[in-house]
Length: 633
Image 1 (spheres, helix red, strand yellow):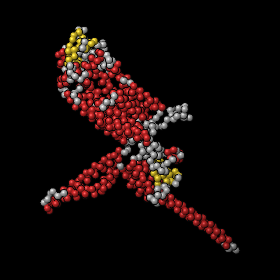
Image 2 (image 1 turned 60 degrees about the horizontal axis):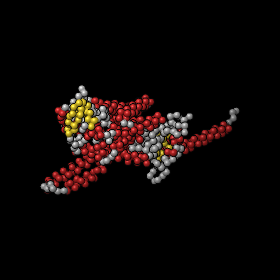
Image 3 (image 1 turned 135 degrees about the horizontal axis):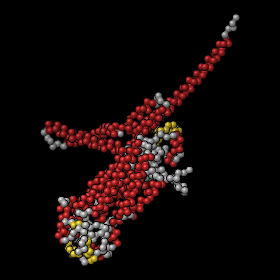
Image 4 (image 1 turned 30 degrees about the horizontal axis):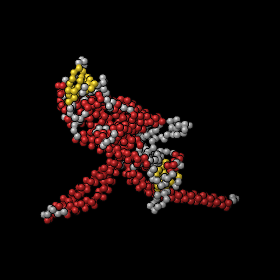
C-alpha cells in the first residue's frame, strides 16, 4: 500500500527529500545569487554614501517634524508632541487637532499610509498636508488647530529640518548620529554577508542552505540604506517591496525544510501558502509572517523529538535556538514599530526607534549564528579544509616573506662589509630568486603539517591505508582486508555507507545490506558508475572510485562505492583526490590477495590430493601386508 503522505490518487509521489540542484538549475540559481550578493554589497554602500552626502532629511525619521510637531500615520491631524522650541513658541501643544491647512479643511481623521496616499492622490486636502509632512523646501504654512478644550486658533509654522535638529540637540544627539538611527542594522551587514557566502558556497547544490543564503541577501538588498540606492537607480517601489517579501518567503521556506529538506505533503502545503505573503500589507502581513515563524519553530521541535541521532539532535537544537530567538526579537521589533507612534515625546520615540532597529538586526544575526553553528559544526565537514587552506596561505606567505627579508638583509650586510656599498641591487635580486625557489619546499612542508593538524582523518587515510593494505595482503583474507579498507574509508571521509565490488560481485558492505547494493546497481544512478567517479544527484553512492591495479590503462578490478556524509553532502574534492590516490594501492592489494588465495587454494588442494593419495597408498600397503603375513602353526 502506498503511503498517504507520499502518494496521491493519481500516482504522483513526493521524493523523500528536496533533490539537489541539477546543472541547469544550479547555474540559474548561482547567477541570481551572484546578482543578489553584488546588490547586497553595492546597495548599502552607495545608499549610505547618498545618506551622508545629500542634504539632511532627518525629518523623515519622525513624521510631521518638518513642521515642528509629531503625528501618527494613522491620523496626521492629531499632534502627539512638539519637536523643538519653535513650534512651542508658535503655540502648538500636544493634543491639538489640525482642522485646516492653507485654509483647506481637513477630514476628521486623516491616515497617511501608502494605501491612503495612493487612494487620495488628487485630494486637495491630502496634497496640502503632503506639502507639510513630506516637502523639501522651507516655507511658512498657516494652520488652523483645535485644542483639546475645543478652542480653535490659527498658527503659522515654518517647515524645515531645523526643528528636528533643535530637538535632537536638546537631547544631546548630533545630526549625524540622528541620520544613523534607522541604519543601525548596517553594523551587522559584514557578518551577514559572510554568513550568506558560507551558506551557499558550503554546498552550492544544496537547496536548503542556498535558499537561506539568498533570503539574507534579498533582505539586505531591499532594506535601508540599499532602498535609497534602488530608488536613485529608478527601480519602482513595488519591485523593492517584492524583493523584501521574496526574501521572507525564502527564509520561511528554508526554515520549514531545515536541515535536510525532508518533504511531506504537510510541508509542501505550508510552503504553497507562503507566496500569499507578497500580497499582504501592514499588520496582516506581520501577523501572517509571525504565525509561520511559530509554525517553523513547532516543526523544528517535532523533528527534534523524532530524531534519534545525538549529533543531529544537537544540530537541530542550535537551529531551533536561532529560529526561536529570531521570532522573539522580530516580534519585539514589530511591537516597537507599532508602539513608536504612541510615544509622548521625541526622546521616547528615538529610544523606541533604536530598539526596533537593534532588535531587527539582532534577530537576523542570531538566526544566522544558530544556523551557521548547526551547519559549520554539524554539516560543514569541509570547514577543516577551509581552515587548513587558510593556514597554508598564511604560513607560506610569512615564510616566503621571511626568506626574502632575511636573505636580502644578510646579503646587504655582506656586501657592505666587503665594499661599503649599500645601493647595490644584487642582494635584492638574489633574495627574490631564493624566495621563489623556496616556495615549493615551504608549501609542501606546510601543507603536510596542516593536513596532519586540521585534517587528521584524511591524513591517516592517505598515509596509513596504503601501508595497511600492503601488510594485510600477505596475511589476511580478502574479506578481512575489504572490511578494514571500508572501515578506514569511513573514518577518513565520514561517509554513512560504503561497499566494495570486486570482479563484478559485491564482496563487502558497511552500514547496509548486499541486497541494497544489488538493487542500486539496477537503478538509473548506477548506469554510468563505471565512468563517472562523482554523481552528486545519487543519494546512495555519489562517489564511485575505480580500482585499477596499475597505470597502464588496465581494466578496473573493482569499484569502491562511497556514500554521502551524515548531512547528505558528498565528500569534498580533497577527499575524492585522496581516494583516487589510495585506489591503486587498494587494487594491487586486492589483486595480490586474490592471487595468493588462489595459489593457497591450489596448494591446499594439492596437499589434500596428496594426502588422499598417501592415505590410499597406506591403505594398499596395509592390505598387502595383511595378505603376506605368515600363517600361524
